[in-house]
Image (cartoon, rainbow, N blue to C red):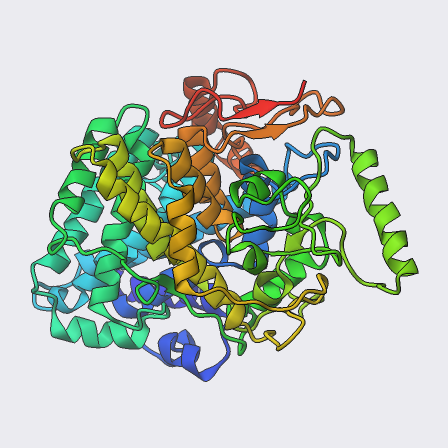
Length: 573
């Protein structure tokens, strides 16, 4: 009887989670539950991936929500000093982000239950789905922890097992973020060891190839590199400040001292994520990003980004400017890269743009921007829904891994401090990041010869890899600021939350903001976001206990997380 109930629940859960998938490829991976008698562990694994898509990949929801919060707070997205800028998108967006994570977690609880209740002969072929499903859920748990701090996890996602609402409410008490991060590090090590053993079940791998919607397409090597690289990301996140520096640095040491046992993402062919495609809107990332931007301010360049790319004060790139500049931003018709001046008011910033717009029209240039904007070919698209059909989701890149190794060796995080190794990994990281952004632009479905920008009116000049290496050598300095700034820049608009994590953890780059005197409750950038309305309404006892335990002030907005610096930005006087 219990087995019948489980199968019925799995069918309903997968039908709800996957109803928007309609093309043949997805139908093969997600069989219609009404036409099948069982929903197995491999199929639930695919359901986990699909449920995580909205926040793991460059979708409309993720981009809009992050660009108005972590993108703004980290300084990778420009802001024009509008009222309420440090409050971000409406609370409803954060609430949906919370809801979506727990939908994903509930799918994992179903997979976990099915796996635990298999007979021992079935488990070897399904173990890889159990381990990778847990890995994806914990990768998103890291993001949730870095937004809110303590969250329910160990008892969450279990209501479907018993239908006992009161018991489920007791189970979703808030877990300590330190304990959860310790669990994540331990679990990722276990998965890394599983792959390193060389005993991955052949039948499981064959099934993974059918169910895997990531760019790995069932490759054990790519998943292995991703798992180890994720462990490195989270270990570095915890290695600078707080209660887990020792454990985090030990993890870094184990990874970096055993490269054959724990291989990492080393080049852009290893980059892990999901390839975009146009047969379903869920994975048509270019269309979603074009919708999210559509000329709105969330695509604006920032002065902090221009400074990090060594753009001169006049806005005209010179021989010292980062080669990524023309792959990241559209310039204005005069070839200038200009960002909002955050020492000015919103009205002053707008007046400057209006005056330039009038000037351009007099010159016969009707459609353009004075302020630099995310590149229309690579990322932003040229109109609503008219985006780069080849835009892919990226979870972890080779550039991030190289720059993470550079910081670990420079700072001596678990390994002996070695400036020479740090420099080499830094050069690799900067070059790989340049290559990634240029590949995204050149490989765009919108790429064209000649004029390479829909709004910038400039000719395409593509640098070569030697240019990337030369630039990296030129900017190298043996400081955490130098490396962290490049790590932040590499995340950029592709992963604004991780960019915010870098600034909160290291204080670099030090982004400068104007205080919002029109919004007394949220006048400056926060350290975290407040718990969402669903928790306040439906899990009030547990969330109020978490607030009482963790918040040093009423909103939580200005209570730092344990792994972060006391302050990570500065203010104009």
